[in-house]
Length: 116
Image (tube, rainbow, N blue to C red):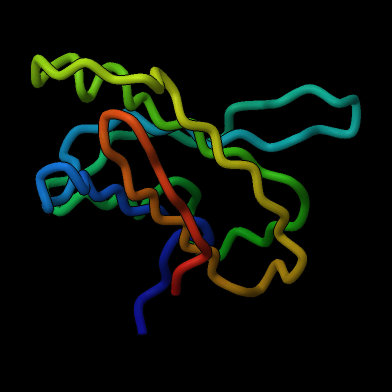
C-alpha cells in the first residue's frame, strides 16, 4: 500500500451527478491559542479528489477544518448558490488512522461524513 496524506477529501456535485472539479480547498488546524492555521491547500482533481493536503506519514491529532470554496466553484459555472464557503470541522482522535472527509454539494445544500 502506498503512503498517502492522513487527511483527504472528495467533492461530488450532486446537482450534476459528477465530481466537482477545481474546487479550492484549505485545511486548517486549531492551535493551542485558539487561532486557525492553514496547513494545507489545493484544488480538487478531475475526479473531485484532493489527496495531498499533508505529507504522507504525518502524525496528527487535534481539531481540523476543511474550507471548500463552493461559491467560486458554482460562480465559474454560472450557477447561483446559497453557500459561498462550506466549512467542516472534525476531531482527529487516532493520529495513525486515515481521515477521509467527502463533501456532497449542490447550489443550495451540502452533506458530509467520515469516509474511508
